[in-house]
Image 1 (cartoon, rainbow over the protein chains, first blue to last red):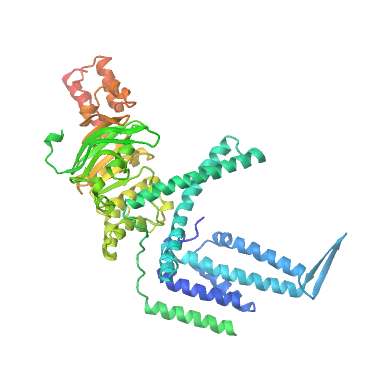
Image 2: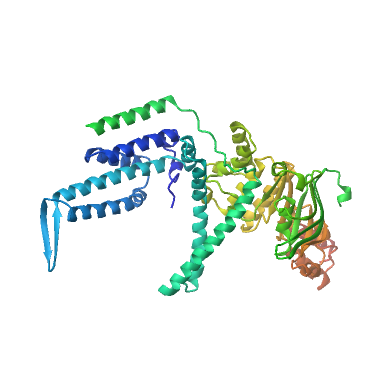
Length: 250
Length: 287
C-alpha cells in the first residue's frame, strides 16, 4: 500500500542524498533506458537497481510485489510479440483448427521491450525506497512543477489511506450482513459503498478545510525549502550520469 | 465563581444563539466567561450543543446571534489570523485535522503559515512535539500513527502556533482507559506548566472530577448550571434529567448513603476521595 518511505526507517545511505539530485539522476537514467536500442544498458540498470534495493535491505518479497505488475505487462508483451510478429519462425504448434507460430525476431523484440519496461520501473522502485514523500514533493516544487499539482499529490497521499480505511469499514459492515452474497447484491452493495465514500470524502474535505483555515491557510500549502546542494553529491551524481551515458553509447 | 477570578478574561460569550439551516436551535442564549489558565469542560449528552459551542467560540461558525469576544474584541471584527494566533480547536476526529503526509509537516503547517523563518519553524515543531511526547515520531507518515498518537499530533499542531487557548472536542473519545488518562494528564500539564487555557467538550463523567476545575452542564443548547465538579455532581436524578450520570464511584456512595443509610458525610467523586472517606469511617468505627 505504501510507495514512499516504507524502508527509510532503516536509515540507509540513499536517504540523506538531496532529493532533487535523486530525481534528476532517475529521470536521466529512465530517458537513457527507454531510448537504448539493445539489451545491455537496461539489463545493467535492472540488475543494479535490484542489487541496490537488496543492499538497503528491502525484503525480496516486497520487491517481487513491486515488480509483479510490470512483470505481468512484460510477459504479455513478450507473448504477443513472439507469437504474432516476426519473419523467422522457430516452431509451430498445431492443434485442430489452430496453429501457433513462435517467431525468433518477435521474441527478441518482445524481450527488448520488456527489459526496457522492467529497467525503467526498477529506477522508479529504487526512487520510491530512497526518498521520503515530502522530500519528493519539495523537489517537484523546486523543479517548478505547478504548486496546485504538488498540493493535490500531497492530499492524495494523505487521504487515500483514510478513504481506504473507511471503504474497508463499510465493506466489512456490508459483508457481515450478506451484502456480497450474490452478484446482484454485491453490485448493489458496491454502488452504495462508492456513494457513501463520495459523501464521506465531501464531508472530510469540509472538515479539513475548516481545520486548515484555523491554522492560517491562505490558499497555498507552504513547503520547507530544500537545503543547498552538496558539492560532493553533485559530483557523484554527475559522474553516475556520465558513466551511464558512456555505457549507453557503447 | 467568576466573580472571584483575578486572571484576565480571555473568551466571553453573551446571549450566544445559533440555529441550523433547518431552523433547529443548537445554542440558545449561552453566557460564559473563560479566564486565562482555566481548565473547564462542557458536559452534555450527544446533541446537547457542545461541539457547536466550541465552534462558535473558535469563530468557525459565523452566523451566530449574540456576541463572542476574544480579549475584549468582538470575534466577528477580528481576522482569521488574529483569532487563530490565540485560539485553536482540536477536532474530535483527528483525521479531520491532520492532512499533511508526515507528523513534522503537519505540525509545521501552522507556523509556516504564520510566516516564521525556517529555523524558528523547526524549533517550534520540535518543542511542540516534545510537549506531547511525540518528538521521536516526527518523520512518521500520519497514516501509520495510532488514534491516540494522532490526537496528540493535533494538539502539537496548535501548540506550535503558540496558541494560548485550546478548545478540544471530546479529547478522550475513542481512546482506551490508559490513553484517556494519558491525554488528560497531558492536558493538565499543558494547563498547569505551560499556562495554556483548556476548554473541552466531553461526556466522560468519571474523568472530569479528577482533572477539571470547573464545568458547565449543557442540555438542548442551554447551560443548565456551572461550577466546580462537587457543585455539579449532586444527585443521580439531576444528572439523569440531562441524560448523564454521576461518576460511578459517586453513584455507589450515593446509593450506600441514601438507600442503605450508611453515615457518609458527603458523596466523593473520585476513587481516592471515596477511599479516604471509607477509611475515616472505619477508624471512627462508623463502619
